[in-house]
Image 1 (tube, one colour):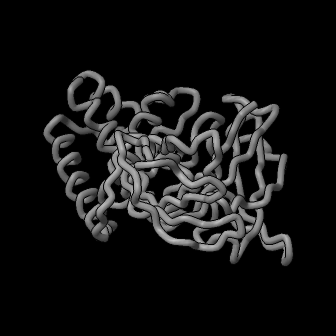
Image 2: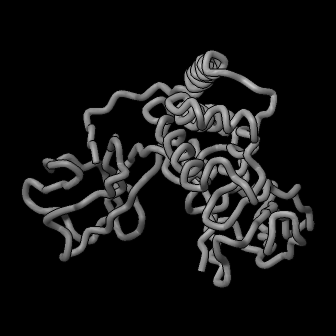
Length: 283
């Protein structure tokens, strides 16, 4: 089984309410529709379109995929996405296109190389920009003496308490924290939902808004070029087989400098201003 993380449309479910998944046995082969899934709205958060997970029970790393958005009411379908291989992402395909490394029979960079560069680019978004979202914990007898929050939480801004009827009953500050664990000064009141207003970094490629892709691709290209910077023979092999326009190490250095400037400018344009908070929980 192969699990696909599919980025939701940028406007949520306003224009489309479903995602169509197409699959082929080869990159340039015929793509057949294998599933139409409802867009998962539960993953949508501030500054993130969210993502929909599809489990392909017969999928594998040897399969290739395209997806589109679909409006079940009007039967309107969007253009198809870039082709991406199983166990990779659409963002990986965009990085390969930037690097001109698209020959699946003779990749210069391995899938692991591209995945590492992609993950580095996503990690670099924090703390310039982030996702503001919530995390709910229902207080029961089993966990009333301790709440463990997920390690992905970078900051906790507020705690709000709701009763069994989902009515807001006030805030809560009668606790102390050690790492990502909260301990009550007496005990947590049972029968309530504690809603944590949290900040978390982007983790999943599909949860990053599409408008950040150009920045992510810049940073991923930077990482891949720097692997060539430390190996002259590998760089010459790359310019010969992938970028036959030629080049030398000084030209590579200039490419890196230009990309660093471009990426820095883009990241500054995405930078958010954080509101003050008395709670700062690092996971």
